Length: 398
Image 1 (cartoon, helix red, strand yellow):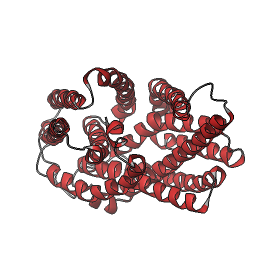
Image 2 (cartoon, one colour):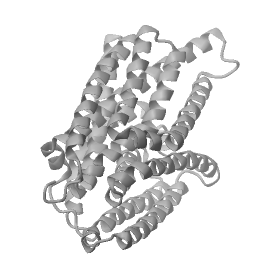
Image 3 (cartoon, helix red, strand yellow):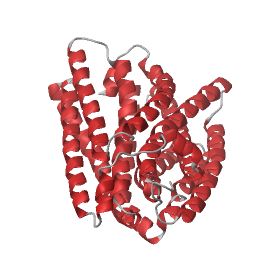
């Protein structure tokens, strides 16, 4: 729905890049507001409140769309907020109800659910949007959020009933008192390192996406000029490439999530798992700096994205298993929203400068190698802090 609406706006493709800065700035207001709300309600009311808010937004968008209001920009911005906050909140909830040992076993299954949901959702959306149109899909999405709300309440009641001591049951009903998300991240070195790692990770990955997109675009232009597209237009050539690219990326990500992630966490642990993706990126961008050809870029990005969507996503959230409840909800939101979008923003600025200077794939690959070096240092620092944390702290020591 987002792409259909924003790309219909004149200059929509360029506007998508500019709106990244607006999204990053918006979280400077949203994260403190979320933290203030979390300090006044318990976890199930926090999650339910946010889901109901987003579901009601979709109903409003449906009504405005039917009334002929242009929704491209506001809906794009809304999605940029929703798709980070809602997913981060799922992982906050999982961090709250599972112990570190349970998380090592079960986070891989939670992540596999996300992978399957993404694959199934894209297929269902592709079929429904042809028959019911864009705007009715908003009501379908709102209904799915209500289902998520019901599931959250079921899990909340079940886990509260499973708690062995009254203190744990009472804790589930208590508001998440304490500092806001940004204050927690700034004050605790461990959380700050996680935030910076998230920023650098997304900076590297988004810049890599530009490298791939620019190379595919140039190859498509050359293929059209030489008549070697097999009768396809430039757009069809690019679309066919990305269809194949995303199929392998999603397939490898789902396979890794189901068969590898839980075993890596079980046998090697969270700290060792932090190094898997940066090592893949280090090898990949070293290859691109030497031989910047599309076949190699495609392989590098498939491996990088598949690892990001499976192991890296799971490990990054598992880092919060040893933190306080306030950090699980408030700091995780700050990390997964503001720091993530700031990585997008910095990548956009880098692409802008690189375009002005006429830098090519090789130069951007070398630049990404420097970022990967910082990424590895942050992974090592997080590993040290994670080891020192030991058992999860209580609220008083958090």
